[in-house]
Image (cartoon, one colour):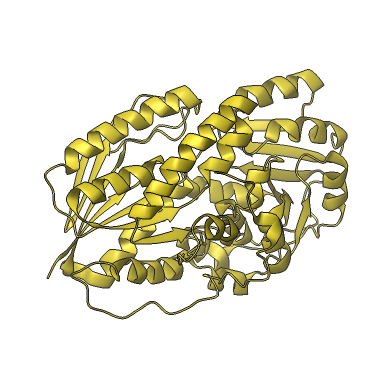
Amino acid sequence: MTTRILLLSFYYPPDLSAGSFRAEALVDALRAELGDQIEIEVVTTQPNRYHSFTASAVSIERLPLLTIRRIDVPAHRSGIRDQAQAFASFAFNALKITRKRKYDLVFATSSRLMTASLGALIAKRNGSALYLDIRDILVDTVRELLPSRLGQLAASIFSTMERWTVKQATKVNLISPGFLPYFNTRYPGRTFTLYTNGVDDLFIEPRLSLQPSNPSIRSDRLQVVYAGNIGTGQGLHQIIPELAKRLADKVDFHLIGAGGALDTLKKELARVEVENVRISPPMKRDQLLQVYQHADVLFLHLNNLKAFRRVLPSKLFEYAATDKPIWGGLSGYACRFAKKRIKNSALFPPCDIEAAILALQHLEIQKTSRLEFVQQYSRRLIKRKMALDVLQISPNYIGRSPRASLSTPSEHDPLITDTDKPVNTS
């Protein structure tokens, strides 16, 4: 009997987003598992992740037993209002598209809760099983990113929405084990799976062809690369300008990306009058891999906010696969994870200039094999296990259960501590 699955993701390739790559990997794993016994309909948006990056994609893409429907949404620059308008357009059209269709299972991957809530609404309306993939905790984030009173009001509203959404779900996966104390506190007695991000094949396959840098021809100036979103959450405007100024005689920074804080970053760079920072627009991952190969150090940073103490950035997995030294401003679970599992990573408290300079001095500027990490966190393997887990809740599926894996740690993982627990969100 055919299993019919609706997959909701606000981003999907060719869009550039951790969520889009995660969704595509799951689709591939589901199709590999069930073959012609599965029909998948993906409802997503036309590429819109970055205002400065455009990619063409057909509105309806039909493949054997797979249909991808891309909805046009208003252009946005990562502001709250324009993002809300973009999601409202997506939600309205997704509800319209799915109104008369029947699904055995709805899968929704969501970073800002809203796609998860949309999935819950569609599943409830259609009487389908629901699998949620939670990639962030919006309740915590809005409390800190918005002004005090507005943040408290938004957190209260989204807290109620989160409870309703999670209540509708047959299963809930948390992308970061650091989320577990938060969800265990709010939903006692509920079991959560922990299928994390992983390393894509793109970053694994070229490994054998990469040659170590030749110290005799390498520039005396360190080439430091950051690639990813440039928003308030990354806080680059609070670290890069002053850090670049302090290291003007030693380091060149190349920042690749876009986001809501890009203009603020540019203004700060102009204010401190640094000339060793170059900014490039987002680029495709095959191009990005070439940039990584020529870098000396890969840089990562999250803003100094409590909400980010529980996250596990997808960029950590991507960076680790390159064998390059990793220099990062991280706290909480991500910091503990990198220290324990990623060799040759030098970490410092977010936004701490002095600590960042000291951490850089402790890096070994050379390639470091992380083969064990890459094998353990292969996205293909993680998604295969997650696909089997997703299929367990389909009424039409009869198959094997996913095996336990180190890539899905339990609540007893020593990296999970009480410091990850949330403030009161009621």
